[in-house]
Amino acid sequence: MVKETKLYDQLNISPTATQDEIKKAYRKAALKWHPDKNKDNPDAAERFKECSQAYEILSDPEKRKTYDQFGLEFILRGGNVPPPDAGAGGNPFAGAGAAGGMPEGFASFFNAGAPNTGGTRFSYGFNFSDPNDLFRNTFREGGLGGDPFEDILFGASRGTPGSGSRRMRGSFGESARSQRQATPEVTTVERPLAVSLEDLFNGVTKKMKIKRKMFDDSGKRMTTDTVLEVPIKPGLKKGSRIRFKGVGDQEEGGQQDLAFIVEEKPHPLFVREGDDLVHTVDLELKEALTGWKRTITTIDGKNLPIEKAGPTQPGSSDSYPGLGMPISKKPGQRGNFIVKYNVKFPTSLTAQQKQKLREIL
Image (tube, rainbow, N blue to C red):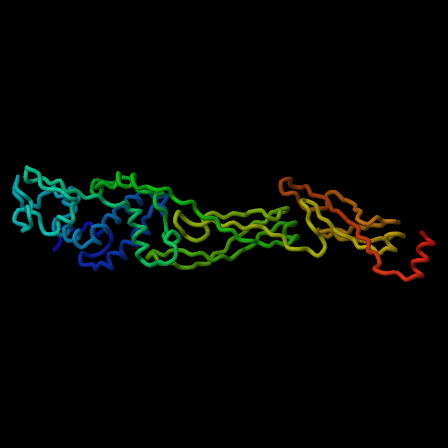
C-alpha cells in the first residue's frame, strides 16, 4: 500500500498503473495543459508543471518506489523529513539495511552526499527537470517520426511555467531559467492562388479547402480539413499576399501561418499593366492606310466604338481614362484603358501588286 496518491491523481491513474499507462497518461495531460495551448488559462502552467514532475518521479522505478514508501514531501526535501516512525533526533534510515542507514537504492536516487553530524538531516537533494525539456524528450521517444522539431507540438520555452506552489516547487524555477531557450519562429507556408482578371476587377471571396496536420489529445499526428474564405479585393495585384495566422500544421513554436500569393490568370483580350488594361487591335495594311472602325467591349461590359480615317501608324495607341482596373488604394478610381494598334503587313507581294503600290505611293 502506497503512502500517498497525489502524483497518481495528477495523472489520473491508479497506483497500480504500468509504466506504459503512466507514459500515456502523461502525454495526454501534458498536451491538455501546455501553456501554449492555454494562453487564456493562468492555471495551465502550474498544471503542466505538476503533471511533468509527477511523471518524472513515477516513470523512474526507483523514484516511484521511494515515493510509494515515504511520500512526496520526503523527496522534495531531499531526505530531510523523517518517516512517521522515526523518533525525535533519530536517524530516519536506521535499520534500513544500507550503508550509513540509507535504504537500498537511495544512493542512486539522491545527489551524491553524506549524512551530516546531526544524524537526522541529509545533504541529498533532488532537482526537477525543465518541464518543456521533459515534454520534448518524451514525444521524441514516442516515435512520432520525421524531424522532432516538426513533430513536437509546442516550443521549448514560450509559456514556460515559473516557480509554482510549495507542494511541487523543488528547484524548478531556477532550473527553467537556466535552461530556457528562444522559441523558434512560427513557419509561414506560401501557396499560389490563381485568380481571373474579372475576379481581380470585381472582387470576390474564394473558398479554399486545405489540409493540415494536427495532434490529438494522445499525441498522435492526424490530418484534418478546413475551409478558408479568401477575400480578393477589387484591384488586387499579382504577387499580393493574403495571410492567415495559425491555420496550418502544428509545429514547434505554435501553429503555422498560411499565405496565399495571388497569381493572375492569362486573359484572351486584355493584358494588365499596373492599374491599366491594354487591348490590342489587329489591322490589315489596307485598313491602316485607308481607315477602319471597330466596337471594343471593355472588361466591365461597356461598348467602346473606335473609328479612324487613316492612316494608322503601327505601334500607335489611344488611352481612355477611368476604364481600366480599380485602384485598390484609391476606392472609386480606375486606371486607363489603352488600345494599341498592330498593323499586319503582308508576307509576300506579286510583281503586279508591287508595281501598283509604287504608282500609288
